[in-house]
Image 1: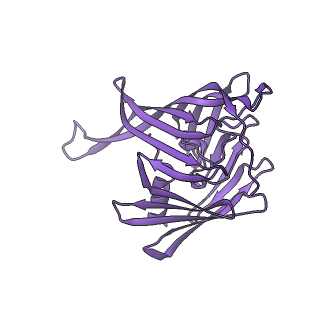
Image 2: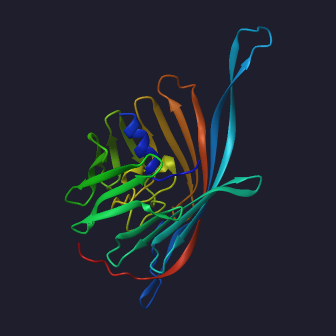
Length: 297
């Protein structure tokens, strides 16, 4: 399952309506931290094939098969422990295919000055206002469209509202609203079409401690908040919309960090319509990083 950040959901919706587990071990201005090093995603894709019934020349039947797609993720950090690159690729016959890379450059205020998607530095731009992310602009050259996401925040600097618009179609604006639980995890997300509600574990968030929000794992992320200051404390264990309930079962290591996850999607109408859609493996490493002083906003 190749991830294209917030690009795919942006276009779809418009058309349709490290772990930072710090220890106390420090040496001068450095300290040790545990970060997500790499991950393996196995997606189980349901393929429906139509075939002719051998007993009839006029009746066709559908047959469902499951195909497994494997994608590897590799995370790179700078000397401050900040995530600066995510590289992913599908594995087919033990060979890497369909690669994708997201690279960022941050300034001393922990703001994104450059976002490179597959080495294209012009597709995504971050705009800050009062030292907090105000807009993300996404230019899609294939369609010659500029999509703009504009964020509003509450007093805790949590993004509570987003406006998605296409500069060529100013009258078509989509509004998204977010609410939060006591741990500042997204509790509900509402768009013009539906409402999603989320639940969480009580363990350390898998990519916590980063200066911007980014999670490449589809079922575990709130895509619309990518690059904002959203900083969840815990991992999503379930969410539901009008039609489905999705659950995520984790196993954890001794540091209470997820090491495996299994995603199951179940129909609200027919409980027998339930299947595992993804499985994950997570691997960590310890870094010794430089302490970066926080800038006042």
